[in-house]
Length: 286
Ligand code: SAM
Image (spheres, rainbow, N blue to C red):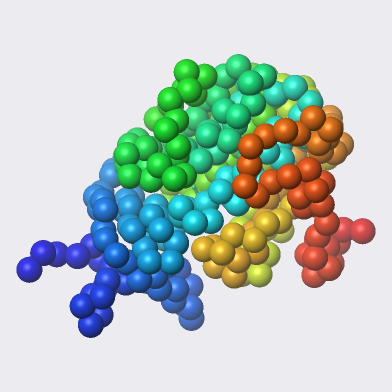
């Protein structure tokens, strides 16, 4: 009998992916087909075709993005910093192997260079091939794929980027260091004097400790720190957070926003910074 990847179970002849990141919660998705499964030097990589969310990228058994809801995350993490900075030209993406963020950044004709530093070449390869609903047919000459550790890359660059987007997986395995203060310090140094950065900072419901730590770390380096949220159905508890650090600019400017998007619009860009009361209270924000 053909061996199933350890993250997939066969129950009554049906295939199920069960995410079991937490001790007391298991999330299961019924799967039509295992489109790809293999090991890279960094992680176990799968593309699955699910009944409810369409094709999905799964790393070490954890859903990263799906055809159905990936656009919400990819649009809000990308368009916010690109409209916070008035004239972004040099953009760095760290992680983002599904190419969904690079695809959004490429919608800005004023952007001259997009460096995408992804540790795992296999993720990019399989997403380009099997997850085109998220990756698009990305072949923009401004996108430079650099297969390297984002932590090391950030250390080696100085005063180079207008916008940095950290599209990381959860803070385990190769992504753990993408949540450290020293990494944020290196991002600060890699930005130009009016640069803007953003990172995903986990769930306000389940991971408030990580959110708070990320916010405090970025706030200790950047004069302007803003938290915003969006609901991403396939992330545990749905509500997700993003932390933005800006060296100079105070707010998002949507006057010229004209991009072809499915989630983002001017109103969402402006209102995403309105935070739920429990988030404000726990961060001691006014
Ligand atoms: N949007 C997704 C989420 O929030 O779960 C994450 C998308 S993306 C697939 C995350 C990527 O970060 C993965 O492809 C992973 O290989 C990459 N990654 C993890 N650690 C990294 C590191 N140290 N340097 C560069 N890329 C890294």
